Length: 261
Ligand code: ADP
Image (cartoon, rainbow, N blue to C red):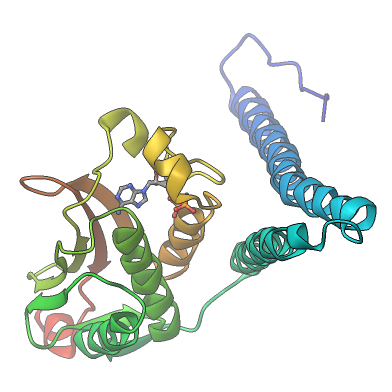
């Protein structure tokens, strides 16, 4: 959108109105620019596995009859790349749903949800998983999406830390909030990257993370879900090494709080 309103030199209500109108246009244009970048990134990410799949299909077509021994390797490649595409498309769909979404919020015990998530993740992750802190903590949110958030954070902790190092969920209730942290003893995240890891398609660019692989969408989905839960998330260093993601849910107002107002 190119239109702007001329801003009168005299401070006045019209002046303020024109200013807010121009700010709004800037915000709309920024949003449109982000959308364009997102689509271009998504297309680029899909193009790589598609090219790899087509390359192996051609190889089988050209040489498979004479050299059948190449076929199993190519099939494995196609299998891996199509799995990667499927994960990417699933993440894009989840993200687009979360973009449009509104979640039904309710009161529930997040310790019970964390326990359930840990039970499920024990079958998936190699690291020992533990839950520490309060034995019950009621939050106001959407339990299914909180489970999705914890699963994504545990999956990342599993991906980016050694198999023998424990991963810990800690739940702590204060007078104003409930804090839920997921901590690992892995690669950790440099300060320059901390500001970006929740952006769509952002991956820390080291040989190690490239080797581990991923879409760079997991934490973008987490950030959307956290916002829909009206919660916040930030990342810190774990001691002596590793990362700690901290989710904060404002403490629900109880009836006794309401009475004391
Ligand atoms: P990916 O699919 O690459 O894992 P995410 O959006 O889940 O995408 O994470 C973005 C980036 O943040 C990752 O590529 C990785 O570099 C970094 N990261 C996320 N979680 C951790 C963690 N627990 N320890 C170290 N680095 C992490």
